Length: 191
Image (tube, rainbow, N blue to C red; front, side, top):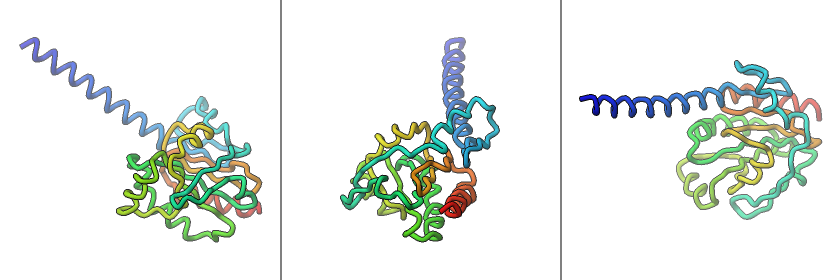
């Protein structure tokens, strides 16, 4: 009897710890929103270092899109660039796609460019897109870019102004629609 109780107790602790860690991680991801240099969060100031890229030049990258066309951040200077870092198995990433598609529809593509940088392979993304719609220009196998941008969580959205400076970062998806629209509109005013 003691043996079964001990095994059950160990199982409960392991499962409980895993769920608590996953919940804490999701909570942390969902509460961190970096917006125009101001950290908005229920967290303490110790997370301020997460905004280290804000108001700094965006790290350059050059990758091929799903059609093999080269996409270079350097070639997009003078335009506002909206980045979304994601991957197929990330449920919050997939859940925000309809909202991101709607946001994209509201902006002139001559002024605002929307790019999705995925961890997944070209083949995996093409299979995924048979059942899901994502209207951004998708760049597969973009883990190296995520490293340049010091990403620690997905999804992450950023806005880069026409001078190539990062003006907005949001980690996680709470109120992505309102926050991203406001960031794009504010950046457009600076053109």
